[in-house]
Amino acid sequence: MIVFPAIDLKGGEVVRLAEGDMDRATVYGDNPAAQAMLFADAGAEHLHVVDLDGSFAGRAENREAVEAIVEAFPGYVQLGGGIRDAKAVEGWFNLGVARIVMGSAALKDPDFVKEMAREWEGGIVVAVDARDGMVATEGWAEVSDVRVEDLARRFEDAGVASLLFTDIGRDGLLKGCNVQATVDLARSVDIPVIASGGVKGLDDIHMLALQADQGIEGVITGRALYEGRLDLATAIAMANR
Image (tube, rainbow, N blue to C red; front, top):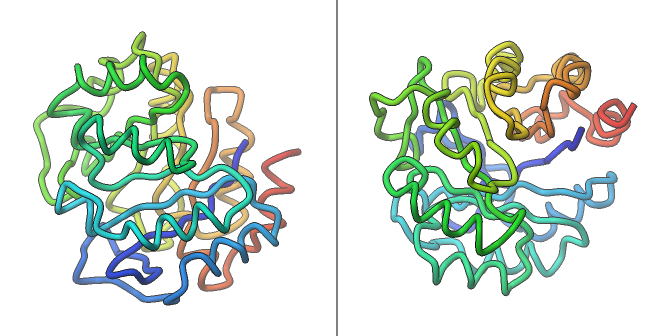
C-alpha cells in the first residue's frame, strides 16, 4: 500500500484545511519544494499535491510552486486542483507529473475524463469526495445529489488508474480515517481506491493496510505528518508489510 504525504498549496504556501474550508487554513511552511524533499528523505516515493486555489478558480493558481515540487521530488507526483481541460492535462504530464486527479470534471463532464483516461493510460485519478455520502465539487463548496458509489461506477471500464475517496467531514480534523466507507467503496467497484481524510496516526495506516487486498491502493496523509502525530518512515514501513 502506498503512503502519499500531502502538500496542499494556498497562495504559494503549504497549508492544511479543516473540512475543505479555505477560511480554516493552517500554514505549515512557505517552501513547498523543501517540504517535498523532507518527505523524500523520509522514504516517500509518491507525493500528493493539491492546488487549493486552483480548485476554486478552475485553473492553475500555484503553478510555480508545483513546478518547483516536481523538479525537486525524485519520485512520483500526483496532482489535483482545477485541472479541467485537455491543454492543462497535457501541460502537467509534459512537465513531469505522474498522475492527474480530476474531481469536478468527473461529475460535470465524465466523457472528457474518460477521454483523458484513454489518452493518458494509467495517468488519471478520479476524485470521489463525499459529504454525508454525496459527491461534492468545486473545491468541496458544492454538494451534488449524486451518491459516491454511483459516480465511481460511471468510470468502471474507463481506464482510470484509481479512485481517490475523501470523507470531507474528517479531512484535516485528525478524527481518524473512514476505513469502512473506503473499503465499502473499493468492494463496490473494480478500480483501486486511495483513502483520504482524517488520518491521525499509525492505527489508520495499519487498518487500511490490512484491507489492501480489498482494493485499497494507498492512503493520503497531511496534518498528522505536519503536527508530528505520524512518522512518515514508520508509516511507509507499516504499509509495506
